[in-house]
Length: 445
Image (cartoon, rainbow, N blue to C red; front, side):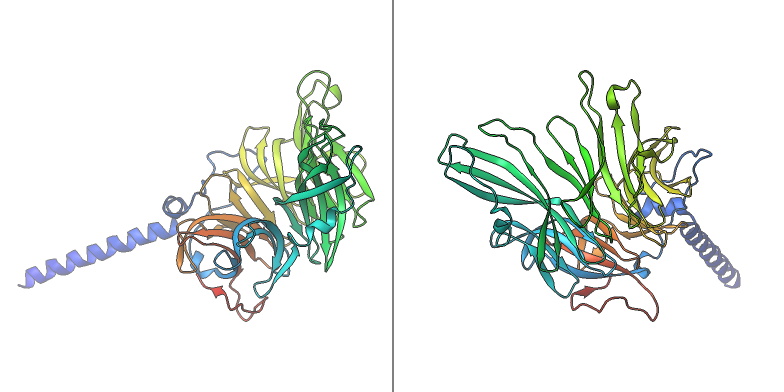
């Protein structure tokens, strides 16, 4: 009996030791944590120009609380893109149940404010006049571009609207997407920033203009990119006086060969503009594919670094730090940070969206389908939310990153398995501090 008891105790001690060892390995191994709960891959190689930020996925549930700001179970059916400011206000495009027509709204989790909808937009197009041969013109089918929305810390919202027109009577007929206009909303006032038309009399179309990216800084400078049918996009920066602008850079279409292009502009509160520039410019035989920078007083675009083979600028803070997704001349790809001229690889995966705040925190979402949202401050990469997580009493099916502010809060859209889509704000947990009033819709992870 004594021998049997000794053997039993020895077996239990060994079993306990083995269990502790397994748990220790699980806790300390970032790669193991990756394979169990994250899509973030560590890099396979580095160059002398890059360093890598470590990866971790532990204690996610203890780092954030989640506040539901608005959902599709009440007034809305679908959400487009969203934008976010330091006051915790989210600007978003959404379709309403009653009409199915999109509009532009803001919310702080307490109140939903209408910026523009089907009731207010027609008054923004009353200046369109009938062309020759027609006695009247009908403007209809207003479409808010769900990808073009921005908000600054003063609460100014920038958005674009496309409208169809019909000349009556006459031979001109019906023009789809004939007018696209860019607006800014300040309080109860909506101002025209820029206007484009797709037709030039008769049935011939002059161009197909569309705004592809919009942004605004706290000084009221608006940046946007525009693409035409001849594949010649151009970028403009606009001051808060919408009709006074500064030309920045443009692509062109040479007599022979492929066109060149500029795209993806972003602007920080210092007035510095970053954008992608690629192609054969001015009939040059040298192909350009890099990120360019324009300061507030610059007249000539300056490439950020010759180490960048090609990339899309995603975010810049007021210190001039730049986060971009792309490739280096070493053929290394991923999400990168440029700080004081030094390139740091944030992650091996290309990112579809990212933001950097003035404290140096970077929030991002990889471009792969089904990816989650992550945040890093230069040490570990922490998961914020991802498909499969439990949120608001349901399971997350998909998420879309919306923004990061200087408080460290993150806005995102989540589609849940209960059939609803909701806009959330992820609030980092802080002791003895609450940035925004607690919403009655607040949900904890």
